[in-house]
Length: 299
Ligand code: C5P
Image (cartoon, rainbow, N blue to C red):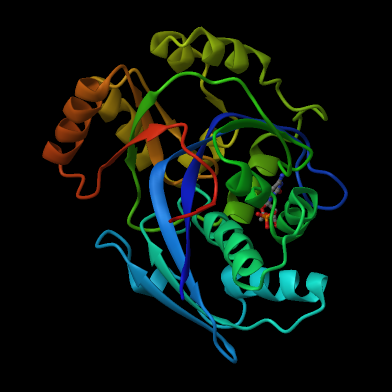
């Protein structure tokens, strides 16, 4: 019998980044939102540990890392060693989340792998332990478990759900070529040698979120990695301008990029913006609502 787990893409509504720490990570004050673009991971019992990947049309299979370092296999091995059992199972991942796009696609897969292995192996691991293992694997993997809308502090791994009763409409435009997250953070260090130790607070964003008003949320969106991402990929700035001209309330780079997400005022607004971007030659334009659930079993 297969265990299937669905995990969502994330965007950062606020990404305040402080001066780099001694351990090489940056202190963050961020607000994540899980949106309705998903990877589905299924896991079947097997004697060894294997991974097969299928990708949506908009993803180049060559961009998906394979081999033993794939984050899905690392997640399985980490949970197995925590539980004192062998890491076994045949994974199949169906990817829809842009790869190296700043939408935590790999993190979603890792979170899904933790949930699937816990279920298939009958472990009943506590939420606290799963979150700690997730944090060991990557800074935004705890959020991929939690989903919804949540504030992240520390290096982004300390996650608290926040009140969000909105149903926000997003249009996402992935880039043909991904950006390396460490490279964007390094560029931030170069461009912002004066970055404060304490990252920009997410408080204003949280107030806008609680208002439920798209126009207010649009004004409050903030990403300290946007400038370095646009400096590395100037065309992202043009894309933001285009989407806003096509009716979006606001465009913003998602996390470390290069995916750009546009907040729209309604389903119709999202359809119009998506059509405008497609008409201007953008081959891949995805529409999604948020917030949605974190990594969860499908019946
Ligand atoms: O934690 P994760 O493996 O996702 O981080 C990938 C890379 O992104 C890190 O090695 C680091 O270069 C950068 N990063 C950072 N500060 C954070 C999170 C990630 O500098 N808070």
